[in-house]
Length: 280
Image 1 (tube, rainbow, N blue to C red):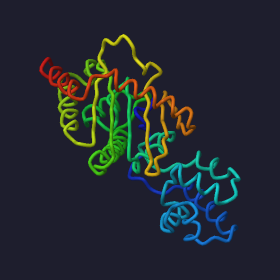
Image 2 (image 1 turned 45 degrees about the vertical axis):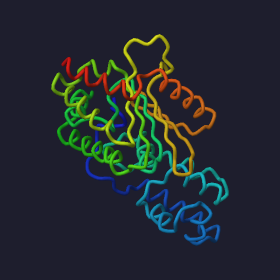
Image 3 (image 1 turned 120 degrees about the vertical axis):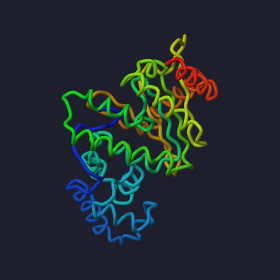
């Protein structure tokens, strides 16, 4: 099972791939067939000619906005929507998570509800390595190092994007489990307390005892793009589901909003974390 989009294979930094280059070649062929320069096409899809070039050369993972705008500009054949499902790029991340990871990099709002583990963006190295060691089938040392490198790269978003609003709701039982042991748990709680001091990060704890809970359908993530479009992502063992349907997004937003009111306030969550650290 992958952990928070983490794959069990691969190594190194994100690089181009045959699938990315093939997708780019299709975009270029359709663009040229329609008699459009990169600059003209960029104007139609709302991206710079340099971004268009990066996609066509297989150097950039296209996001949802690019694919949808390109489809409209190039005849709505559906070819790009189908092709993008097969793109592969970033080692260390599960195939089904890569598109979401690329969208995270541009998000202006990112909400996460997690009932299974500490969210990947908030994990300490010791906590993440425990998850990797527990993977089945077992990972070798190279795979573990690759997975941790990919996770570190994702976590840079928290500090590299100070204008992005990050919200996290974490179940109290995830912390009570003491994954990795007492010292790992102490480090995790200290890390959460440090991150909660950043202006763009809100961490709320869902109490262990709760009469009503809007999150019983499971973990989820919600994301707002710079163009104020929302997407959602949900993960299960060996698969993930990217949601773009506005009606489905609306339901998930309602659930998340209800959970924010059901979880402890930000201040009370910080207080609980301090008490949990003192009790360990």
